[in-house]
Length: 87
Image (cartoon, rainbow, N blue to C red):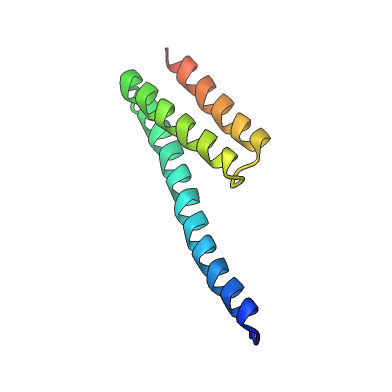
C-alpha cells in the first residue's frame, strides 16, 4: 500500500492510465473485428471503410506507444491481404 503522497498520486495515475489503455485496446480489437466481419460477409465497400478506420486507430495507438510498430504493421498487412483476396 502506498504510504507517501507521491506514491498515492502515482497509484491514482496508474489506475487512470490502465483504464484508458484498456478502452483504447478494446477499441482497436473492435475495429479489427469489424473489418474481418465485413470481409466474411463479402461486403467490399463496408470492408474498405472499416479497414480505413482500423488503420487510423492502429496508427494512432502506435504513436501513443500502446502497440508496437511491427505489431501494427502485421495487423494492417494481414487485414489488407484479406481485403485484397476479397476483390
